[in-house]
Image (cartoon, rainbow, N blue to C red; front, side, top):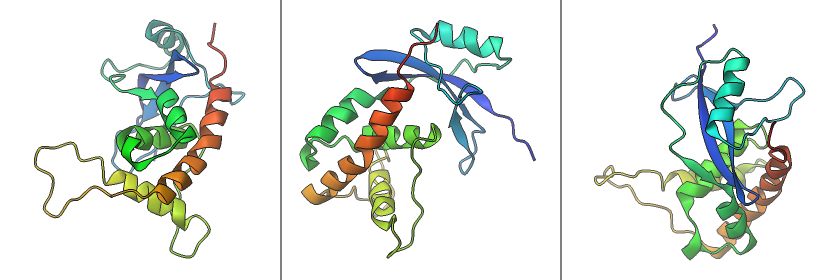
Length: 175
């Protein structure tokens, strides 16, 4: 069954500049989200949101009017990864970067059981998610995770090579 994919123009800060790209989602909680790629596999990026919209229209995609309100500050996450500390961790920002890496097929959220090779990464992703309730009234018993220096070091080590790969894939602003 094919589900309708909604297309949005999104913005990332990477390599010291704003880059716009296209993101698609079926908008289902358990659904699939992807970053649009060229037929050859590259990720087209643009200097402006208007250029990204024009590209989408030329490809026959309808861009939703809402969206793009979040800026993925990948430069901020890259900087944090160079000197990761619990007191400087912006868990929501790091989580959004991790999700973008997944949607761009650069990295995947692990779904591992204890004892499996990706179990530690899976546990860290779950801990990041505990910071994502931005409500004045969190659910009863909700507590954000208290990060250790070892955990943030491991998290930064997991993210760093994938952010560098995304930087290469976002390398050129499409003409």
